[in-house]
Length: 485
Image (cartoon, rainbow, N blue to C red; front, side):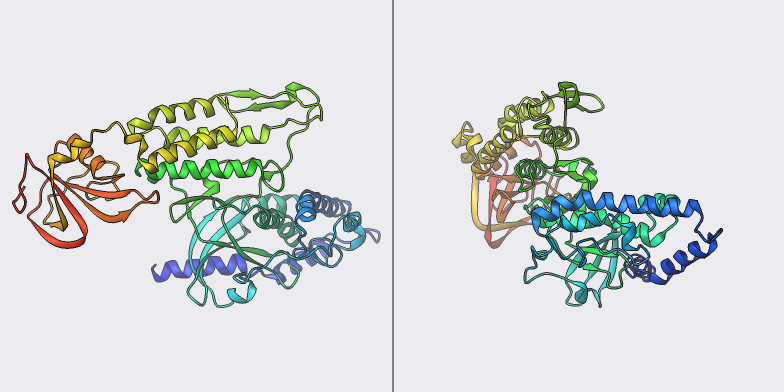
């Protein structure tokens, strides 16, 4: 990164993590003294703004209360049982009844030995801005020991903060209000732990009561759908499989059925090829209440679905349906059908039809994905491939090619050549026979996430070299060993 880029990152980190308490205190005193005291009382408009902000704060506390009770979180609470609020709000203005509803003796956020706290952030180095939204900004930083993590904190220039300031004119109170989304997310990341949910590495709270809080997460990279569309089918299937496993977990989570109300690709990141959910602040663990069947209609831009209202007055299963159809329209539609292995296309079609029409639930969908994964990984879908196909090739074990005459195929693991995943040399031979340019292929000990081999296909090479981890297969009809092909 250039010196200017580093300076920008450092400036952003300073702006969003080193909270300027004096700015807020001065702003607060300005409001008090500017609007002060007509006949010994604060002007009515200022009182209304302040009371409105207090109501909003209490609503946010009530929203997060169920998660705190079920998880026994204490770390984010002050001694009275409330989230820490800045001192400009006196207790008589707050809904103090909440303090009796929270068991503050139930314990802290669970900290493991690898927990990262405020102390580890002292000497951090800003590297990049990974993304920002209405509420939060995410920064990539390096800790003093060289470890790379993502820091998520309140975005002071974001839409939510701007709206709050416009309504209430109180920067410190607004920062606390907007922080509730991040506090909720930290609690949910503690409760909802799954391989396809981003890992919470720790958190840091502002020590001076300014309401500042930072989540410390494992580092991921924003999901790039265009790049994903250009990747091999196996990698796109991995994303879809991980998503279905996640949705199955969310439907049976410790908190109940969880709905992702803001289900968009931007809510996900990639970590070492694995899809992970990173935004949980808009998650809901409550199924919608209903009085009649018409209350249980799930509306999408092009489709509507409905469920019966249960005897308990709840739209049971609506959260699961919402998640599953969103997975279909944002992920499956684009990633799953294109260039699926011919022997698996009937299974792909079944999944697309079932999820597109919501004919099955998430259990059925997961079972279908796992069945297809087993067939693909084991190579059972290739049983009808003739075993004699490999006889058309001469094999040189312990050798690799040099001076290759590369050609490109799409999609390939190597964008400068033609590298595809295969279950065996038999499948590689089948692929080579289907490619007019192919005269040879090489197999090494490289494998994909499924355990399948990576095969490199060539139209020719100049000579062979010794390589104990490689085998070269030459078409007998087009080449002989050691010749230019």
